[in-house]
Length: 110
Image 1 (cartoon, one colour):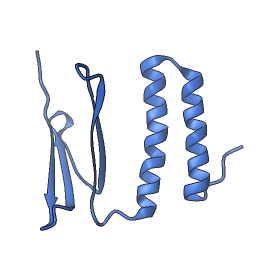
Image 2 (cartoon, helix red, strand yellow; image 1 turned 90 degrees about the vertical axis):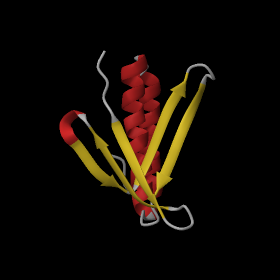
Image 3 (tube, helix red, strand yellow; image 1 turned 90 degrees about the horizontal axis):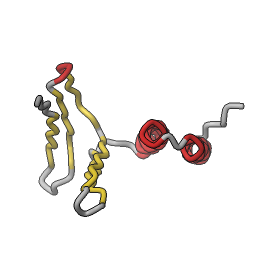
């Protein structure tokens, strides 16, 4: 069996507030700096989601809104691929459009 490592380093200030988030992955030699991250892991034994939500103090509110909008759309795509539930994924995308309109001022495409 093969393993692959993804590493996340978070630099904190004196008040333990994230200042920088760096990540890298062995496969593809990927590495980058990020201003926010949402990590969700499924705990089968507890039947519960374990989460790590971090953002740096330089992450703007507008960028956070865009970050969430893109996560809503990505979750809809992943949900549809994982479950085949196209109708529910479409409703999630509809909510994404509603979110974009009300949080980002984007008008829905016709």
